[in-house]
Length: 246
Length: 363
Image 1 (cartoon, each protein chain N blue to C red):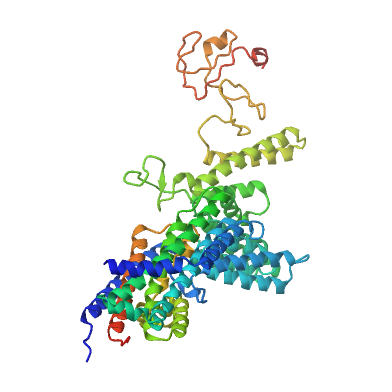
Image 2 (image 1 turned 30 degrees about the vertical axis):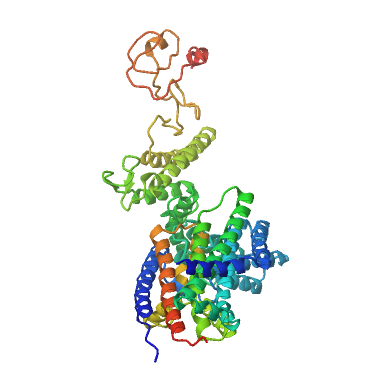
């Protein structure tokens, strides 16, 4: 267990020490704050715009962070550090899960920074923050974790650049999978269960319009993200166990 | 040969099964939150979960484009705005401002498109909003006939239907019901008395059946009609109040006209009209004391109507004291000065002892 935590910590620590990351996060919060100035230009919808911008930027940050998972394992393999780690009495499962946990932690950390920064910006402007913002950000963090798991699996199957492109495509398609059964018939619903269906964690339209999410729905959405991540991670472990890393 | 990783595959199968269950639960929960499932099919653009933010950005751009319009909006510009508004409301079906402001923006040039936009809002998002059907009715009544594409009668019938829909939504302002009643009784013509009589018949037809309060949520707080609408918010109550006001105001005006009229024929005509107006008032007569002549309410201890000067049946004053020249308004069943029991219970407690004795005696 301590090995797992050590791999996760080192993955998280290396990425979180990057100064560029914090410039991006501060930039996101500033954009959310700037939306507060759009009162006249949006005919009195500045508050809604701040809220929507906060969720959208959290999503972008979460997605970009999850993308870093695509490069983590190939880099370790390329630099031969993975081989070094695997010479120790450490299972391949630990290595994969540790990498996944490290990037997932980074996703949650980055989304939390944007969320708290945005909440502060909204509070400074309106003296109140809609609790739906925290619910939305929690769901986005869950979505980023799911993408991280998919990214880890893709990095073992494809070259890193190709895996990144495929992950981005899955991110785009994943948000539109709910349309398939409506547009092409119920048979296509199966695709929505096989591919990562990010629509299950996307409630930004409802939350932005002040509709509160029932606790059960929120928990089931988190549960979907976690169980799907475990499933994908299981595939990644199975693939990595059969792979020759020497 | 490498072994098949059995444990990871079992974990994969279990986790997939669980994710399937979770996905089902999430979508069941979501369908309870949205009014119309069809709206899912309308969000076809690859927005990557940023639908609402994109709708906001499009909205801001639309506002800027609106600002660029010089003078009157032409039809081409209106068509462009209609397309953008359609796209915005596809992205965010609950965008109430886009429906209302957008509808108003294009209503003059493209009334049918404006109505369609508002109806889209009702269908896909804001089912509980009174403003969408109300503005649909308004556009159908005011702007649609101008285009001369739809006959006037059909426009008005459409408007009446929309007003009726708006009047069924709780939390609406009073003018929604008034607009409905006005259009529903448009056959009565321009004569105010005829209108009033037609409106009485219209409102009386709506007299609700009140259901038992026991076992209903919030029982004891108010009366409920069939269907669950609170009695206080029912069109019947709101419109009957309106008719009380209208008949009272009209009666006052007729009384004034009657007092200043010279022609006997004309006076007779006014008397007939006054009789009909009083009948309307009687149909919805509120609790309290009203002047029989001009229908103005009067207070305790008043002997003549302050509206028309006619003698009214006074109440809630001590007869004994009044006989001695003092006006004492009763605050209970007994006079607080002489202790005489009152023949009727007072409704308002005001004491104006000797305030206008001289004037009252003179009358």
